[in-house]
Amino acid sequence: MVMPGTEESNQPRWSVGALAKAAGLTVRTLHHYDEIGLLRPSERTSSGHRKYTEPDLRRLYRIRTLRSLGLSLTDVGQALGTREDHDALRDMLANQLGQLDQQARRLDVLRNQISRILDRLDGSVAPNPEEILKLLENMTMINEYYTEDQLAYLDKRAEELGKETIAAAEAEWPPLIAKMTEHQQAGTPVDDPEVQGLTRRWFELVDMFTGGDPGIGQSLQNLLTERREELNEQRDTGLTKELWDYVGRAKAALLAE
Image (cartoon, rainbow, N blue to C red; front, side, top):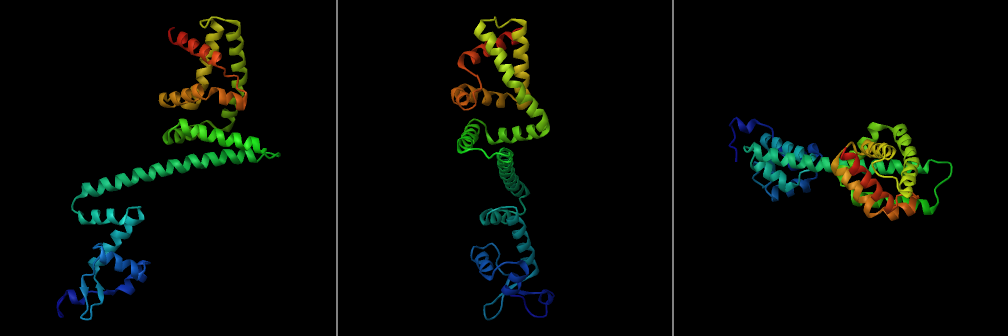
C-alpha cells in the first residue's frame, strides 16, 4: 500500500470500472485477469476495491497488443512473465506469424477457388447440377494432391500469367494431346523429331503452370497417374494409360539427348 504524502501517491489511479471503460473491456474480464495473475492491481483501498496504477496501465497495454496479434492468454502470460527474455518473445511472435501466414495462404486458395466458381457461374447459361458436381469433385481431387503451399503458389502463378495466357495455353492442350495420340497409335518411335518437338512443348506447358517447381510437378504427375481414368471420364481429355506411357518414354528420350 502506498503511503500518503509520497510522490507515488500523487500519481493517477483507476478503478476497475474506469479502466474497463477506457480499455474497451468488461469489468468481468479485468477480474479474470486478476484471478489468473495476468494483471493484478497494484493497490487496493481499505475496503478492498481494486486500484490500478500507471505501471498496471502499461501492462494492460502490452496485454491488449499481444492479444491483438492472436496470442492466447497463456502465451501472453508467458511473454510478459519473461519480458527480459527477448528471445522467448521473439520465438513466440515468429510462431504466431507463421500461423497467420498459413491462414493467409488458406484464404488465398479459398478466394481463388470461389473466383473460379464465379467465373463459371457468370455465363449466360447456369451450369446444370451435373457440371456443378464435377466442379466440386475436381476441387476435392486437387486439394487431395496438392499441399496448401503448392495451391497458394499455383494461384500466385496463375495471377502472374494472366487469364489470356492461361486460356491460350489451355486451348493448346487438346490438339497437342490429339497429335501425340496419333503418333502413339501409329507406333511412331519416341525419338522421332516430330514426337520430340511435341514432347518438348508438352512439358513447356506443364512448366508454364508449375513454374518448374519439381514438387508441384510431382504432385501433378501423381494426380494424372492415379486419377487419369476419372479425369478422362469427366473431361474426355484423351489421357489414356497408353498415351501417358508413351509420353513418359518420349520424355526419357528427350532428356537423354
